[in-house]
Amino acid sequence: MKLPEKGEVRKPSKTLAGVTPIAVMCKPKKCKHGTCLYCPSLDVPQSYTPLSPPVIRAKMLDYNPEKQVKARLKAFKLMHHPTDKIELIIMGGTFLSYPLKYQYNFIKKCYDALNNKTAKNLQEGKKLNEKAEHRCVALAIETRPDVCGKKEISRMLKFGATRVELGVQAIDDKIYKKVNRGHTVEDVIKATKLLKNSGFKVGYHIMPGLPGSNLKKDLEMFSELFKNQNYKPDQLKIYPCQVLKGSQLEQKYKKGKYKPYTKKQIESLLIKMLKIVPEYCRVMRIMREIPPAYLTAGTERIDLRADIEAELKKKKIKLKEIRFREIGFALRDKRKKEEIDTKIKIKKIEYQASNGKEIFLQAVNKNNILFGLLRLRLTKEQFLPELKNSALIRELHVYGKAEKIGKKGRKGIQHKGLGKRLMKEAEKIVEKEAEKYNIKKIAVISGIGVREYYRKLNYRLGKNYMIKKIKS
Image (tube, rainbow, N blue to C red; front, side, top):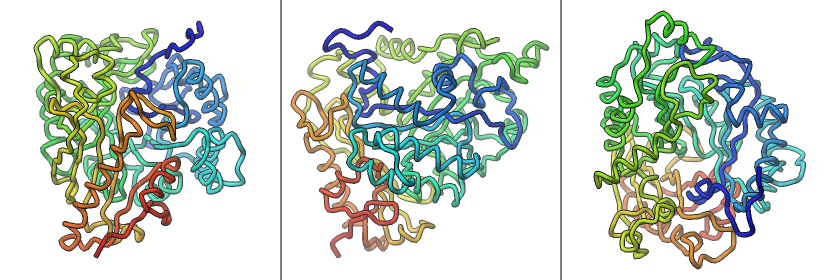
């Protein structure tokens, strides 16, 4: 790789959402339920190929989490990205089904790498990270809906996790059976509710074009995600079904029993889907990065999102979803000056989800460009003793190019008090709703590296959450 010139930031989009993402892959392990029809079996982590970039990196380092984190930190520094606010993403399969010792050791080693120091145990590693040079401000874990119960949630809290990505794919039990998914729609509903009632941010992986579905059905299922209060994810990754070498689906395709969507069909479907996504949801990714050498059939265009968004802009169609409206991407795309006006107001959206009340606060300008957001949840159904009589803050995020911790914002958006403003607004709402929901305190699910920030706002660490009593 040719090194960047002085002052040049290589791959600037990587940190435009305000954090530096580091994906860490666990070693290969077969799923207990067997293999999904569309999943390849290639002696690498389930659903990946030997030429997938994160697999290549992980395999070179013998899937050692500490070495993977250090290698990515080094790469980001070479590309001139800040590395003090890190979002760790645990990839490679159903991490929560690995042996417990492996899980705890894996997470501890991630913190050791960020801290540049070997801790005695996970608890010490987390404590060190509160003031480390590279702070874990968010930790995401991918899992199956049937491996996301109360025990797994309690364990994820011990890890310092804040976000969970569920492999939902579709919301139809007949399709699940056809593709040997090994779980039910009811598992999706239960996992979603437990996660939200524990303060987690919830992402879904969705896969249009599965065997047993069609274009009309895919769109109906997608609409149901936001109509039905049992779902309503905070984030989405949309991965149209592709035929991969080494999968059972490849055999069906060769026998003429399965046909993937064409590029034109996928583009048309995705445009319809994106128009449905509400303001409180972020479409994180469209299309998986499958190397052409392992693709038997299906769209090869990895950057399909760029094509679709260009088409929407041409037609002057503005999406409501979060990523399309983020200030970082608005600046990157050089939108008109009047469109990115920095005069900000706080906008409130309320909706019911998983038998609770969600209050979505967003800092926007007159053109609905997004500068920051906060997710507040009100419910009486928490199962964790620590959350009894609590309002939950599931996410606080200020967008724009990542700025170093402690650096006062000048040209950028971060570190200008927007987070505090959103927190104050949330606290006012909680005080008004306290009697109705029997609320006595606010609990924030916080990345380990953000605890110091909340302490400055008079929050104190409980068992796993940052807690503040409300005015009675």
